[in-house]
Image 1 (cartoon, protein in one colour):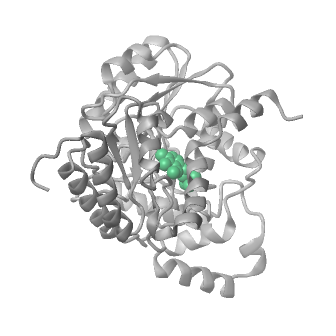
Image 2: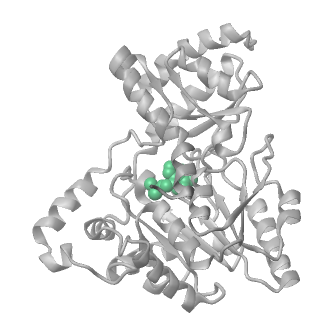
Length: 401
Ligand SMILES: Cc1ncc(COP(=O)(O)O)c(C=O)c1O
């Protein structure tokens, strides 16, 4: 018998993953070129060549114990130091290896951070729309997610509602920018306000509230947009980073947490994160991938590829009369459903072999997410299908298409 908790989780298993499987079945039936699978955030751009070269070089030239053995739960010292120095160069900080904990991707990092700080019944605030897995991660440690409703005009956090929802049980707030699913980058102004409110509420309740900033898309920002460094705006920030998207390595499971010196209870927090890494069963992040990151600290993916998809998709959809905001980062576009029930809309899209993820998966019904980390041909060839869908729904074009 599986546990009661898992029974519920198996039943409500990931909509996105289910669509990914459905997409594979549809590709087998209709031919991959005739299926427009925008469901999963699985990068289509190849990992940089230097990453693959580094893997081979490291495997060939590293002592076996160093390469394959256990190391400290928080990761290889020199890799953590390299990451710290790279952050210092970019953000003018003064981190050292003691601030960096290597993790099994962003998902592993979030679970480690939540394990370190949550007591049962603690409240975790998240701003809709957000990555639905946060609900599961928080539930892993018997916390409770408190959702701040979306501002569907700007998709910046709804600050007034946020302030009202903080209680003496709020242990942490999770943000994600560039955002999945909207592609919005949280502005400096937003982050300043979030930081000020959290400082005020900590004083009011005599509590510590951590701000976890989940940043797997930090490097994916377009048109020169700046992604602000969140710890600048709030002392009790924990940064979660991942190379899944920025280096196209989602299957390799590698990322890190940053815990700044100025965070409350710094020493215990770092110790707890190390122990959490061990007892959650990760033990440590994959050794070879840590060494690869140490060697490829300045490697970058080719974001011009996503940028071309972004422009073509956005302009195409707008011309067809759909409503959406132009994404500033990540590789998602969040489009308003032309009919009230976005699940029904996603089902209609499926009849044109277009796979879209309903916004309710991100606690934001009425919208659908389009993951454009696909081939350019997929984007271009999907537009006539979107046109047919628009036609069926009577979506009014702006006349310029
Ligand atoms: C917002 C967000 N956080 C975390 C993750 C998990 O990323 P990782 O593969 O690094 O665990 C994802 C993956 O899509 C994501 O979109």
